[in-house]
Length: 430
Image (cartoon, rainbow, N blue to C red; front, side, top):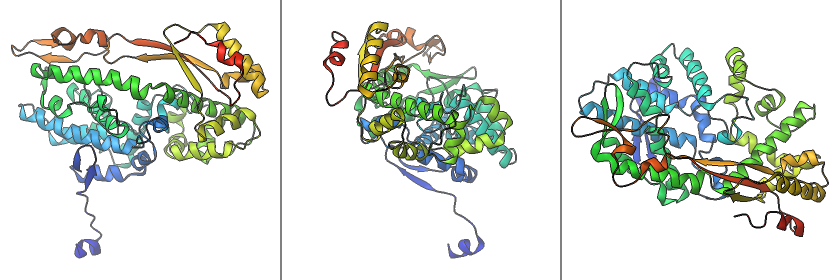
């Protein structure tokens, strides 16, 4: 070991102790080099579940946790498919492992909440491609196959399906991991069993028939995790507050006001950044690579004292966890209800009626566990027939899970001395 140190040789055969799976090893030295890159290390500073810790205090795990776990599951899936007689070269294995490792590298802080506010019309998967392309340039083309797999242009389609599909390693990991850290046991799935049942037919990923009940549990777990965690109404209220804090800050910055924030956050608040900026201006991606949860939370702490009442009120409520009340209904809220609520808020805060858009939000929650119209989960039957899972299941009506469930919601602030008229506006709504 001393000789290695003197020669500058670094041990890259690392092992991570993961609370969900136990020990995870880094299978190749080049993969370790990618993990060490600042783009990847940024994921340590981005929580996997954004504002969810305000409801489930243990939900503080990071996207770095998640991608390592997904890579571990990818390694197991490749081993299973190889054992069943399908050829996967070492280069293809490395490409698939890197594709799943880098699949979330384009996420920004609180990304699902902020995806359409920090940047305009740029999905996190597009940003992941920009990052992988930049890494590929730095690594002299070593990530070319990874890019093909990630973008689904590689002939072996099942490799992309392991990265992104309704049966991918991304979902396998985040359901188990998010269940573990939130303590919501309904989200725990039998990922080992599902991976053991994976196979490939005509270049596409399938699941062997005897894995059907594990898939049923997997789809039910997704539906339950969405209602109990991802679309938990208090989490939704917090996320919408965060969205509107940043919208207000951006509005003030675009008007030329001086608002405290980091250089990276300032760049995105002062400019309307689109996909073309990422393509044509290398500096844009570098600014994005500097953004993490700390930029957002550090700014919001300071914004509590801003002279703008909208920005300061929203910021203080978020920092102190005085979250907006949220009411959910099977029926949409009427314009009369919404406008009356805005009038009450405007009077209470002494703000213009047009500024109440930052305090009263209404939208739709959509929960779809299985989208059979977009992409199927296919079962390989014992007789060799390929059957879509909802047609093969005899224990549960999976087709019912493919129907999206929609609920309407409205968010608004409550005050220590809530006016009686505010309390009565939404009476009778469940």
